[in-house]
Length: 227
Image (cartoon, rainbow, N blue to C red; front, side, top):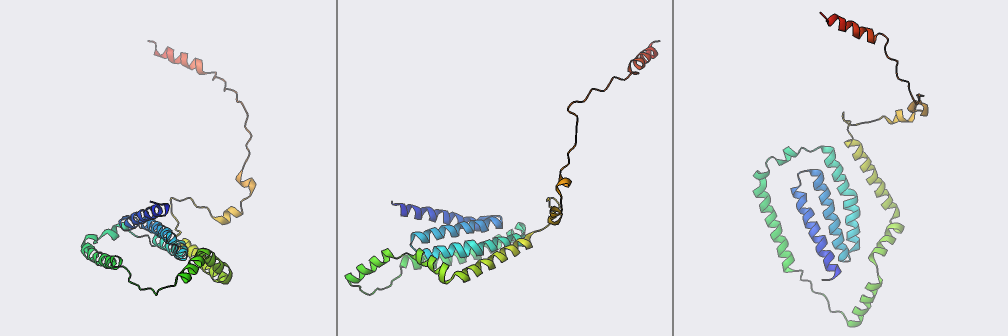
């Protein structure tokens, strides 16, 4: 087994585990985080298949934008876990049947193979195409296009996504009684002398003198006790 095959099995196992946890996690936030993990492993598999554009698009579009917005929407809606679990077993047979149909269709396509007939290529043309493919880099070409021809659309999309993330954070921000919150306007107007005060204390303090009437009071009480 070479290194590429080992990485393929590693990415596949982690992706299957993350996909399983997406549908079995009790917390919706945890499900979204597991879905982000599954997408990252899928992008690693695309890189192994030398499809750099799909891998980068999966990371930038889904992990960097869509899934982050999903996470903020889930946090904003404050979904009740108990209400989600109601009626789960009632709809389970229908979900199981739909999953079986989808799995059967995917198995028929994958095991049947893609029967595509290719035109015969001359040996000289095949050799030149192979040499050009070795010299060509998809990542370099994609980076050149993104940062030269499509620089402004990429920056505009980044600003739009940043505004959406800030808006989602502002909508999900709620005041709680148990949280410590300070008004920023009060922090700005605070002065240094109002925050720190020096108090002079003596290094040693003398013990207080004994009370003068302590002994007579004790003898008087003892005399009262005698018959």
